[in-house]
Image 1 (cartoon, helix red, strand yellow):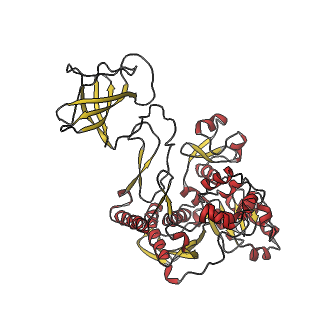
Image 2 (cartoon, rainbow, N blue to C red):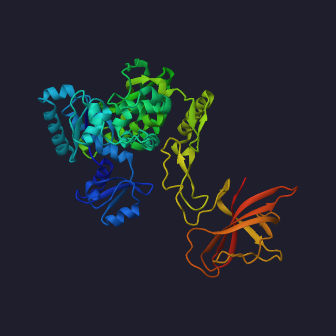
Image 3 (cartoon, rainbow, N blue to C red):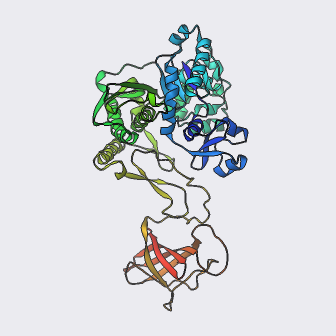
Length: 533
């Protein structure tokens, strides 16, 4: 397998899309941390994982960009077309990496060395970006060879992999961070050390995920050679009227197609590892691209690749390479499948806390049905009609919950477990009001309770009323806490904002806990921010 790799592709693509000069340092950030940076930025000391402020202190001229998979895929289409000019069977692994069988093309160009040189030159001229090429047995080894510009001789893959660090197993989208951490804790710091373990021991200790990683470390293919060509009826085609000529429309359609495509394969006990995306335009143009995935594609994975491919077709910088009309027919083809062990529901699944717990088949099936139901609702009401909650970073209870449209990536924009100054202590209220409800907080003499900037109440809360109801007696209270970062000391003046937790009597010996907010602008004001269960 030959792999062509464009180093730092997210940062290179972001800078190119923004029209930044090649020599300017650039970095891509997600959740306020560097996920990719150019070689120039690394020369200034910028590294992956750095916080934005730290990276900018190292390099004040740093161009800052956000993560955008669509942008990366759109610009990478030019690289894929350049490789396609010299070799057939091009497969996009992900934006930044393409793979191609080496035998046929190498023979045409007089050997592998000749092909490698031609590919690098062609990509440089046609796409204007630098690239590195590697050859090895299998996609995993070939990708690592490309990062080192190495041509591994047939049969020498295991020897090539042996001294490499164990962290190489955690490639993007592989999701092996926990496994790699555990292997390091066990003293296995190289791929060779991991490969030396007996496969039965690996299976007993790490399960199916460990066996797959163990095969890669030994220089074997991702899976045993039990692949078979899927039956024709598993292809999925859909016609469009009116034609699709916008990426957002394609992204919406891709969600439903991904679910149906995945369900069709799952019904036959199969999973897709190479996805062909083929389109016909209104003027009869034929478009096509094959995407390779190291892991079996999920419904979201299928939808992502369809969206990325439409980004490449419809927004490619070279206007002459764009289709001249909208897409009227789309076909998803499972170019390669594996047996569906990966689709079977596991005996154990990780809960929200990361603790392993037993799972049942009914539980997994219910989740699949719920997902399909939500997609149907989106089909009726639009993509912004169904949301799920993501626990995010922030100080207030409303800030810590972000709603994400169903099917979009549930990524955090900030670290939820970071040390947020002024954060409300646990637990958080179960109900948080979109608009604060006016409230009254009175002392035992009927006077309004206030809070000073030194976090002192002018009197103990005795009665609390809100929502037009009768004031209720305060059983206990806690606080106050600053809302945000404390700006200064002294008595309450304009801008003071505090929170107070209060336990109220609710009749018949019942109790209700609420979260109150105090603000002092021109006049002191209390509001009900949330309720606890």
